[in-house]
Amino acid sequence: MERTWIDRGGSIVIKILFSICGRGGSKGVKNKNIRTFLNAPLIHYSLVDAYLAFNDINKEIEKHVIVDSDSDLILETAASFLPGIYVHKREAQYAGDNIAKNLAIGAALDDFEKNVCLVDCVIDLDITSPLRTVKDIENIFELYQKGNNDIVFSVVPARRNPYFNMVERLDNHTQLCKKANFTCRQDTPPVYEMNASIYAYRPECLRNSKSIFENLTDCVEMKDYGVLDIDNEHDFELMELVYAHIAERDEEYYSVKRQMAQGGSLS
Image (tube, helix red, strand yellow):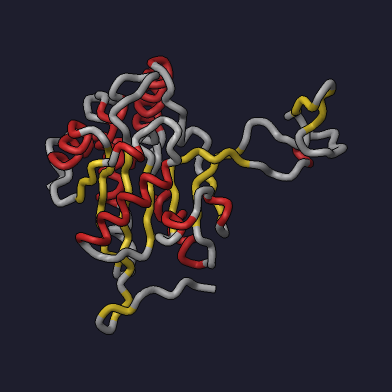
């Protein structure tokens, strides 16, 4: 069933809020959200994605961007690169290490809708995913729009399979995570890893749910090099090498995004 959008003044207008969130503190890589990545602050790459997404889609889409952070420097870096975005200073209660990200996004959404406008969909873009493409974002939204799912998120193929070569320890013994008798991994059901790169949310889910799986969900597969966790200096350097390699050999989009991210402003 196709999702029904709000009719505003006789035409269907889809209002999308891009959410880009990042805390100032990072234990593994200092200031990683604005750390220089191939001659541009890392957050610039997500802002370019939001800027370019849906520009070639034949639908009436109204885009907004909110950057949420407890760091004034992150907010200033984002606002100077993409003028006109909405910046939200994250409250202390949502800035701790153990706070679920969706709760922080929900608080930012409340602030935005109170002061700007209501939205039909929130698309969260993780700052540490510079290898994401506009096509990935549009694929997520296409599935969200067509179905009745509350949340659609990005995944990559899992390198291990709980039906075949993943085990768990229970008391004094070990067993497969999923009881099965497969002798060949290729015969097992496909499984995926959530890579946290892109989430499309029905706004109400960000207010009423502690876990995304309290809602109807689905997923869209990305290329498995599309996201690498940046938890330490080695990860950061590896991501730069992978991006540079892909930009030179495979995807024209990455070269374009890199050039735009290195510019002074998207205005």
